Amino acid sequence: MWCAGSGANAATIVAKVDLSDQKMRVYINGIPRHSWPVSTARRGYRTPVGTFRPGRMHVRYFSKKYHNSPMPYSVFFLGGYAIHGTTAIKNLGRPASHGCIRLHPDNAARLFSLITENGKQNTKIIVTR
Image (spheres, rainbow, N blue to C red):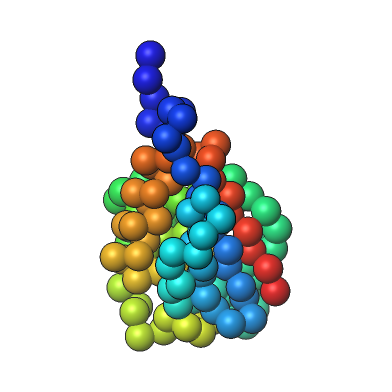
């Protein structure tokens, strides 16, 4: 039986989020392929630091905690923390969230697709200060 991301052709995906410069850099098989502005936790909130694997993923998701806010292309990585698209595009590049990692919806869709195609087991999410 064949599963997405389980074949010999699956790539290794690393999404590195740097809280200090509010950027996500995506590496495919160790080669830098994307650099995108993000918004992480604003003052009074936190974005967890560490190395994580993707958990549940949803193309369409709405926050149960924050006023049913849209979270397209959500990739949860620790409890309720996720990488997801945002409609608050003007805030990208500076802290603005309750702790999630926000991306432009096009970039969130691209990351979601990379993880889906290559498998959660072949993906790491690294968040640093």
